[in-house]
Amino acid sequence: MKPLALFGGTFDPVHLGHLSVAWEAAELLDAEVRLLPASIPPHRQPPIASAAQRVAILRAALQDQSRLSLDTRELDREGPSFTVDTLTGLRAEQGTRPLVLLIGADAFANLASWDRWRELFEVAHIGVLSRPGVSSILPPELEQAVTGRRVTTADALRDQPAGKVIELAVTPLEISATRIRELLAAGRDPRYLLPCGVFDDPALLAPYRQ
Ligand code: ATP
Image (cartoon, rainbow, N blue to C red):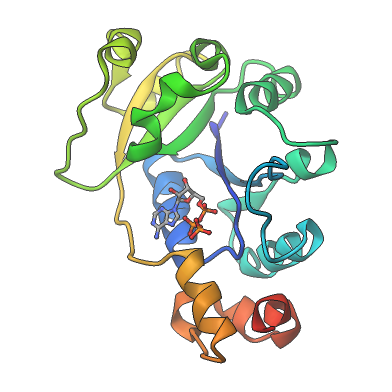
């Protein structure tokens, strides 16, 4: 069974930087990758687009390909979700299928600040998205938790449903949703930073234009 990998974010809006790393992770793991848009906690800056608008953009972005899909469970629930709870829900649904939480190397270095972070290893593998050739030093507490979990081949994730850590060297593009929002608000047309299915439907980007 192909592993199921989860790539979370605000996706306000989703852009080619997200899609290209998600795609490369799908290839490297030979996995289904689901984009998992997050609800935003009340104390954080709210996204410009509503949850429904972000989902419409994601749907348009994910047309016509087979590796990446959308999972709206965090938006369908009341209030923001902790990652460990989302993964526990997926684990209950997916039986023994390997689950992989995809996290950028910077975010991974801060994993020990996440709610119930040690439980993450019980429900999923972790795929650390890193730039080729750039190694990140982990804080000692996290390094200790990761020791013995590291694997270097995607096949090693298929032997068990959770608990391993794999580094995935992907090609990050210098694209951010913040920059895209700025360009759209300034009346610019960042056509080649966004998937064409999104750019070709002006209604999808209208929330960012005003
Ligand atoms: P914002 O600019 O609004 O903070 P963002 O572009 O960083 O947004 P998020 O939705 O916050 O996008 O990111 C979701 C995930 O995608 C995060 O793990 C983030 O690190 C990663 N990510 C964002 N942009 C890129 C990129 N250009 N290349 C690789 N990963 C990215």
